[in-house]
Length: 227
Image (cartoon, rainbow, N blue to C red; front, side, top):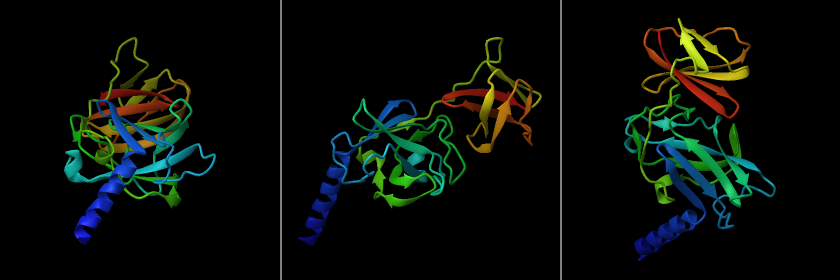
């Protein structure tokens, strides 16, 4: 009888959480996470007036097709949930083609199928004084999705940026974040620059094929190059 009772409790908990948290695949490799649309905050209470909270994420090797652990650093959560008046809920959007797993320092390679991931809601980007229990995405609506190739700019007259002889030439100006990846999805380096029209040396140490992601606020561009 105790086993039946514990199973019922577990089932009730899953149903309760799924009524509050919804994860939807919006396109290949991209998901939308919603919380609080049912006006029920028993899973995680963000606090009165809170506009943003954070998500710690992970995916075990059996759930991501890479054979490797994907994990965020507890002290560096890069996925946010922001209050949306239009949805009357907290909303977060994740592009797994470009998401850096800050604990294991990798991204998911193109062509990989992600079948599940775990989440913890928390109040701080670099830790937590208040957090939720664990929740598995496949219990709250997530369905498997395959990571597409990054959208790569063609090196042409219309391209904003190009890499020549290891140096980045870009028309983007101001504070940029540059992230260099191997084609396998492994992050090689990330750094900030103040672009002023001059060439930027990427200082890639080894020969091979790479991608450089150029982030300028909400705008991103990815350029493929060889060294």
